[in-house]
Amino acid sequence: EGVTYAAERGYRPLQLDVWVPASPTAAPLVVWIHGGAWLHGDRRYLPETLRPNQLFEALLAAGLAVATIDYRHALEAHFPAQLHDAKAAVRYLRAHADVLGVDTRRIGIAGESAGGHLAAMVALTGQRTDLEGTLGVVGPPSSVDAVVDWYGVADIAAQSRHSEWRMAAGSFPPEVLVPPEDQL
Image (cartoon, rainbow, N blue to C red; front, side, top):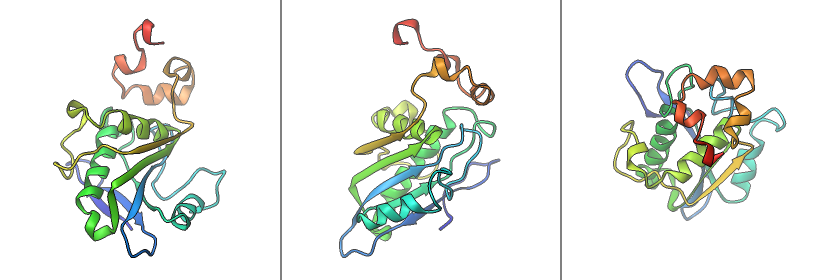
């Protein structure tokens, strides 16, 4: 609980919690990213529609390990910092898999809302070295084998009409906010 996986000068330490089922073999791992419109939220808290730890306990009961991660919020650091943070967490977990008891051949990533968006971004950019970042452990891949995007942002044009999105949008470059017309 509260393991620092990366520390960027001038920012709070980025931490994660790891839950591992009792098992004689290394467990598949799910990396969980919290929501909060990229502006707030915490690795320790699930959406209000779930009871505390419900998802984590269900994953453990299914024989899966789960790591819940922090990331810098949009008003703390501009995009792609949030993506770099999530990728750094995956690399850290891979680098310490033997100690943690997790299987690096079976890593999935999941999240809700903003966390779902970041989970999808991690999954879709596993081979993009230009989006890897240099935060935390460098070397192990940040690629994942599965993704669950639980109501993450998918239609940026429609989402931009919401006031909370506009506040977070200041941290995203224009090409992310307004894709070319042929991609809408």
